[in-house]
Length: 81
Image (cartoon, rainbow, N blue to C red; front, side, top):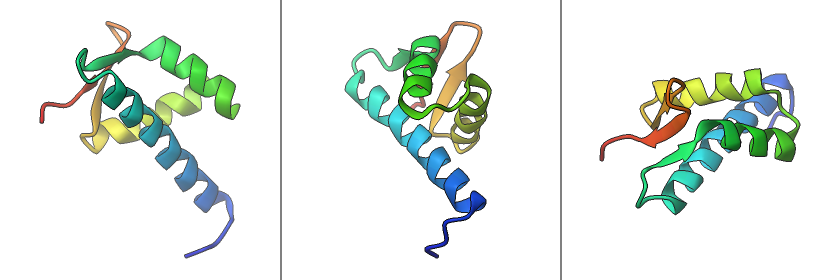
């Protein structure tokens, strides 16, 4: 498509956020989970996105079945393969 409007920027940010989480989960594959708060804080620092926006993007990844966000236990977990 190649356009660089608000929709395209949003799509890129969603993809980058989801890819970051999947990469971290792959690095920590023995454990199968990462810490939600630390992941959000690191991504806020790297991108300048707000916690609210990052959680919105994580919810999209969760709805797609790519991982599970467990807010109660402060974890992002791999889905069962």
